[in-house]
Length: 186
Image 1 (cartoon, one colour):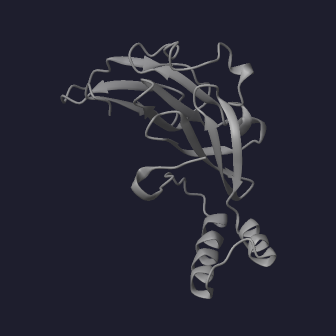
Image 2 (tube, rainbow, N blue to C red):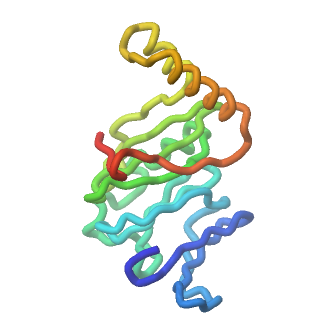
């Protein structure tokens, strides 16, 4: 929800995103039609006054929270998506699960499920360029433990491994990129 009391709602079975005012009205005040498959995640970048939505095919779209069209020119430093890395998820044939922004709106993190493993992609929001991809898979964790790059006690390792095994076989769609105080850095 933005400061004007608007909330964007994605349809589970179509690419439609409708915007409503939180006054109890059932009539949409706007709609974004930039996707070609159902939207799985969306988030509002308050400092940039821009919404980012991600669909089932891995496509990320930036759009204006005010008129539901192109993002504000001051918010981004690209004219064409082909000049960005916003197709990275689609190229990897992965599904986005959540989108998060740094408090200043300059960085964006997208959590995705890549071939039964989790990853976090960190982007420069304004340029749409990928800064780094973090492999959050159990195998990556085990490799880091074996090489000494990661230290973890046996109890925590057992818990994390059990959760990862459950997530690997789950068909549920999970959202959330959580850090202390709601912040992240790249």
